Image 1 (cartoon, chains in turn yellow, green):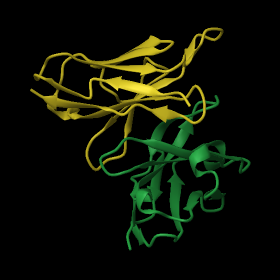
Image 2 (cartoon, rainbow over the protein chains, first blue to last red):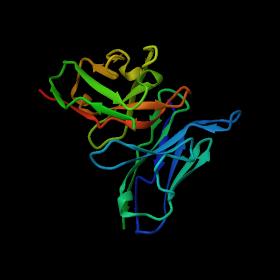
Image 3 (cartoon, helix red, strand yellow):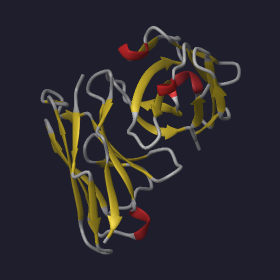
Length: 113
Length: 121
């Protein structure tokens, strides 16, 4: 199975500041021949199901604010919140769908400093 | 818009079985695969398996292969997941999610609200 490792476990950022978190896969989740990267990011708030933010490593989901951006390829990925808002307090998960079983990172908890 | 509505919470005894329903609306049911995932209290997300609503093909994670059955009822646009031989460590929120991507794995754009299954003696 592909192991996904997120860091940090938690992150405290001031309102309006940038929040950056990383995700590393134990082997590549990109197909070089098709230039596709099978990596998604989700936001989960307490008592709610996860919400898709980013697919294909960098494609923002519909109605996802532009302050969320994803980057990376191969085994190293980043999710950035450019200007943290109060409603962004949540746990963020990365997920690979390159292979089955699909697997998730353990999550990064984002809080307000 | 696409919506998935799951059945209600259940309490089960160890060794029992549970069947969770996931009713879809606002989408062409037969065109998608439906995945099942779970999240133990305070823990991360774990993928259990997937069923194609088009042809009924299933694929489950090795961990669950012996005791999970996934099915669909196209007449009611509902997917089902049955988990047998429940243990205390099966206590979790169970989610259905519509699969996106035609590759080996899916990402999940639409989720059900979750069904809490508690295993208690």
